[in-house]
Amino acid sequence: MFDIQGKVLKHVRIGHAQSPAIGKFRMDVAGLQLLTVNYWRNPGIISIFDWDGNLVEQEEPIHTGSPLLPVNWKGDGQEYVLLSGNVREGGMVDGHLRRVVMFPDDGHPDLAAYTADLTGDQRTR
Image 1 (tube, rainbow, N blue to C red):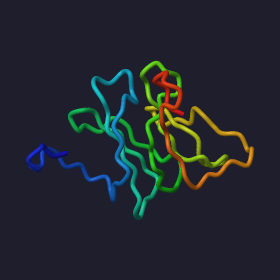
Image 2 (image 1 turned 30 degrees about the vertical axis):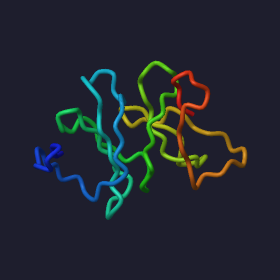
Image 3 (image 1 turned 30 degrees about the horizontal axis):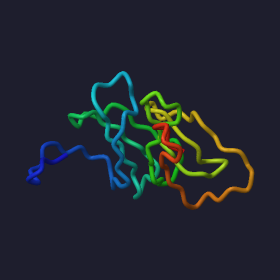
């Protein structure tokens, strides 16, 4: 973590981290959380940090990197994390990195994904 001037505030060695996301993934952890995924040597390991840069959760839900898009699925403020649209290894995980949503095998594409509030009700889909 670094401040607005670029001064390093905290350095945690978790590997080649990419796809950072900020959201309210854990309701039991104060403030927003930051998560990222390892893409090199040990791909798929997701790390979640609290607002102060402390590691609060780490797991490997799938053995590959993912875009890690925040999704306010239920509309209650807690966000899930979209792994991908893949019916076998995709879906969404919660702030404990447990799979909570799987997608149907209906022929939808799974190589690209994006989340947005399409209906104006604060839920992303």
